[in-house]
View 1: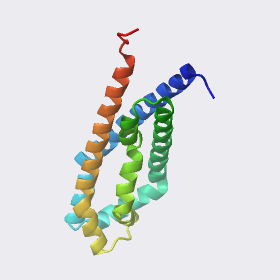
View 2: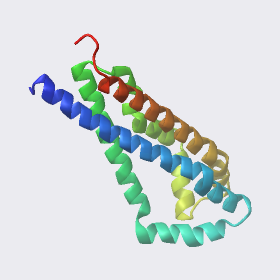
View 3: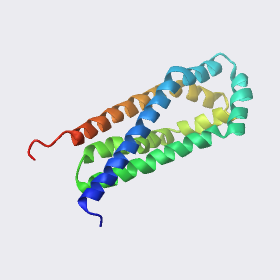
View 4: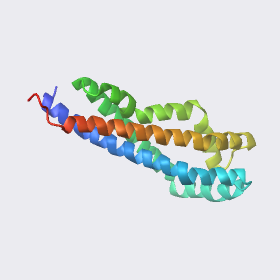
Length: 172
């Protein structure tokens, strides 16, 4: 097994990557809550779903933007798991790791277990019936806003844990 210094260095790099990815996800979801998600909800509520399906489903199919976004989420998940494992190996920041290091895991659990992932996919592909559209409208902003707040809280936890690490140890 690697020596303690090497393990701490790898953990530090994983912390940095986890922190950057968490910050980006907090930004993505804040932006979605403030603008894009509201626009999607408004299109559906104002009986303009056809505008949404005519544009967004075609955009999504042509650009594969959802694939790129999902790849980003997978990288965030894997890096967060790596950092969490390293925290347990070196016995540091384990609570922060369980919350913030696994933030994408927790968000994914809520997103999929709630059924919102299926509703969002159906809406985005333009195949959602009225009931699915209403479920989407009722949960779109609250869910994404709560995810934005959670990722922001996780970012703060990560920054605090990182600041703890960079302060000189007074006992040394």
